[in-house]
Image 1 (cartoon, helix red, strand yellow):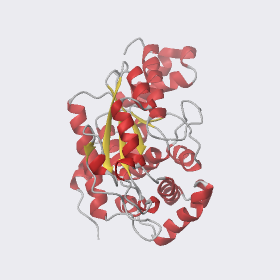
Image 2: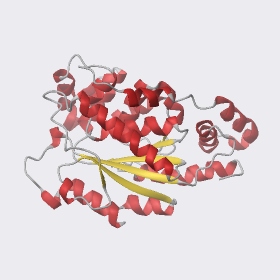
Image 3: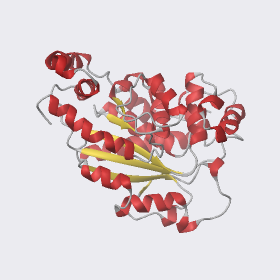
Image 4: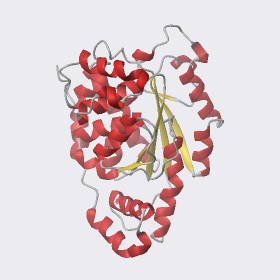
Length: 326
């Protein structure tokens, strides 16, 4: 059964291609001074903002917290749940992400897209989800209705954040699991073998996920079958940001897989995406290659909680400084 999705369809229709004319103008203006990744980033920002002097000072890092059914420890960890501890560290400012984002002049917002320890999450966390997904190695991770509602929640969140002022959106993700889901989702979209792009310990599970959901559907149905609780929300954030000409900085595998799934719905949004780093997981690199994105740097980061994306924000400022504006 296909769920009604008028909100998603409306946002998809509102996404126009990033401006190639603005990107070409930046390259012409910078000349040889714009050669290299910083100049390329300046061109990409101008194209995304449809402005030769893009504003990028209102920066936000959104971290989606979600736990996956295939990673369920089988016991109630309460306030000691790793996802809860990670969210508390971010909220208290103790996490590396919080410090890096603060130094980059960015705010941080954590969304609970479906965690096992929702009752113990800090009060600053915005709750959107209804709990962890099911085990995708035995069947669909969520219903199509849940996927649609998740995408719509991401869209609504982005629109609300834009009302407060939003120039650059950076994305991250915390939670148990995700490697299996990301590998399976990227494999389903790109045609790669899931076992080849998943970590060795998760290769069999990624292959099992595709087998359990065969034939793998397309679009929103594919997100429902293979996504995690964060996947539809991340996809909705990406779709809405692109519809508002806001560039999106991706962190690691969960964010790139969600962006790839969103791009299957709206190919034009690729022009609004920026890859912070190459990560350490093959699924992430495969997703970036499919999106045509080149990472800004390589630091061997593997957490994907948003620190990598936050580290890219000073480069965003530097790229705009090349253009003589901010």
